Picture 1 (cartoon, helix red, strand yellow):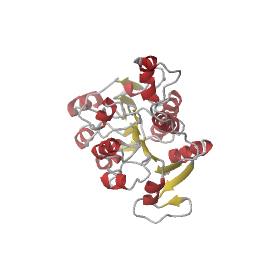
Picture 2 (tube, one colour):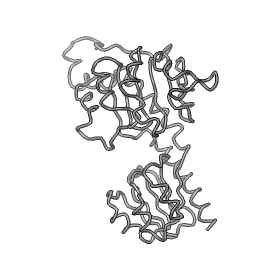
Picture 3 (spheres, helix red, strand yellow):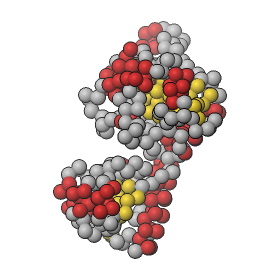
Picture 4 (cartoon, one colour):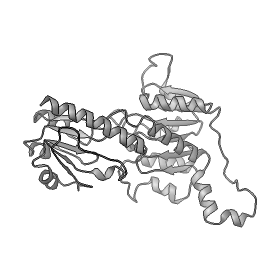
Length: 315
């Protein structure tokens, strides 16, 4: 079977991505422009497509009669028209469980960098501000400890539970948020609004759905009476960027640390970038790479290869 990988460049060069067992013809492209005609041309003979961020719509899927499987190299499936796959008898697979170490560790990297003003102080050392101050230490922005703080987690899957374990090791109190507008399902969960009102840090780990689109908005931000740090390693669309920018600038929240943006790659007109340009000490950004430690990428390909080989064996 022929497999075409449309965006191999989303993986590290140091990660080996061999063809899964059963793939006889393996074609890889470092990147593929979001152009239907180009995608169709590259995949015209493909039985299997590997893709991460390339969007595959009904037009593309309908134009590929040999296509049997779209194997995503990620967990999120919103880049592919699932209904078109069903209509054209194309299987759609994702990969889950590969980033259960990488994303939680990245969560705490963002959290600690914001609470301890890591980027801000790094710049103070490198730009000569510390030298000009003449003191043995520079501390014009408070350093905030994790111990004894309350962490509210929105999205209690495998990653949310691992974040819970790490938080407790730091001595944090952890609250699991129930779905907005729902009664807590059991004693492990806390009412959504109560989590917003009582948390010192709020960490987002939920998928992007119709229900979670702009879950963090002007109204929900107004309920965060403790002025928490908000950390987002979920999806950019879970947060209303303008509302978050306004909340940080007004002091309604302490800060915002995110790995994800509403448009990726982010553009200069994203209001959140104004916070970075203002050198806000509790604003920290990373370019949607929380998932991608070396070990996580290797694990992802191991899971993917097994799935694809099992699929081919059934044909």
